[in-house]
Length: 150
Image 1 (cartoon, rainbow, N blue to C red):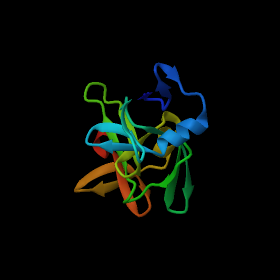
Image 2 (cartoon, helix red, strand yellow; image 1 turned 90 degrees about the horizontal axis):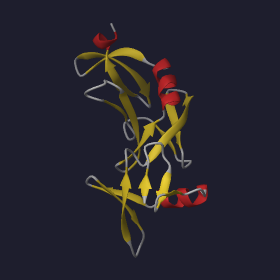
Image 3 (cartoon, rainbow, N blue to C red; image 1 turned 90 degrees about the vertical axis):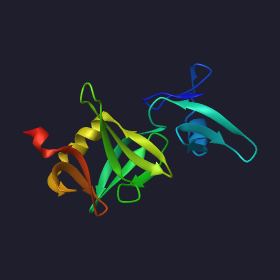
Image 4 (tube, helix red, strand yellow; image 1 turned 45 degrees about the vertical axis):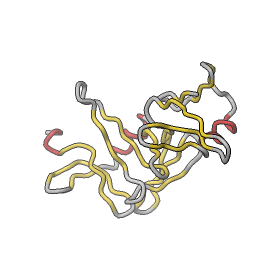
């Protein structure tokens, strides 16, 4: 089984077309170290995840918080328990934004949601450096150092 970067689940090279089945599998996924598994009471099966097991496909602002929804209908509020982080490709500088969904499982924030997230951004000091980032749930999440936007 493989989960592609766009959130599509494949079994033996064929996309799983039943959303209910994908949602069921997503409820039993675990990450141990760098490896992903589907875990039931009697079985633990390794799977391949190209990037993150989930994709955050949208979010809404609810007072001072950002509430994200995933491709498998999980909802999570960004905050200290579910932080947003952004990795940048060392060669291209392209950002890959993520939000923790549960335990040590993350969702890749899709492009349209990331653009909307940037619209919510502000400049603030974080760990002694001026950053451009977003606030949610009482926490500030840095996206890019402010000096790189000049």
